[in-house]
Image 1: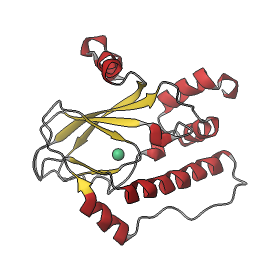
Image 2: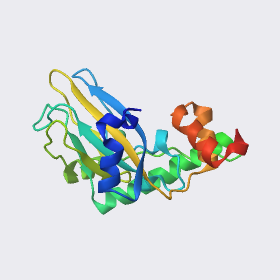
Image 3: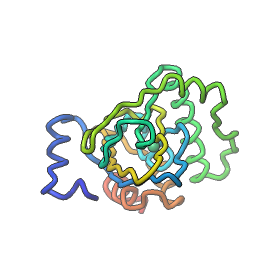
Image 4: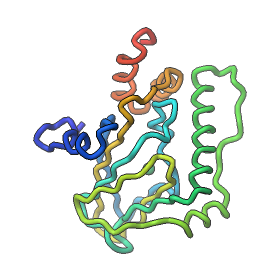
Length: 198
Ligand SMILES: [Fe+2]
């Protein structure tokens, strides 16, 4: 976890800018022309640790400039219609996590984005031009996607922030552990909040 390196001052910077949040996890991502990337999505699946995963913030820091088509910019959708849709997706995903912990819960049809919804997001998306080292901060209820990379490689460093008083969900943590997702963070949260479940 790079953010724990004191020489980078990341935790300090977040504390100064967003005193009500703390860094929970981070990751490094690369994208090349061969990577299709995900279409519009939210990140609830692997990081649904909390009762309200939409409270999580993502800090997306490109390590290469992303200023024009082909550079692998990040597009986000802030339209209310898309935010409401992402909350339906969140409820759907959390329901499936409950099923992992308790298979007696009946299956619900999986969440799907229609072509009209996809077109709506494509029309409403915002694609900021960023320099290497800039930071794009966005709420986890925003659908987002990575744009194409035409040549070379785009690299990005990503941090997940949670409110300091965030409530973590035992059911969801246990389900994520069963799925083997984000094990280091999941184990740490279980140990802190639900030691009896280990
Ligand atoms: Fe994402």
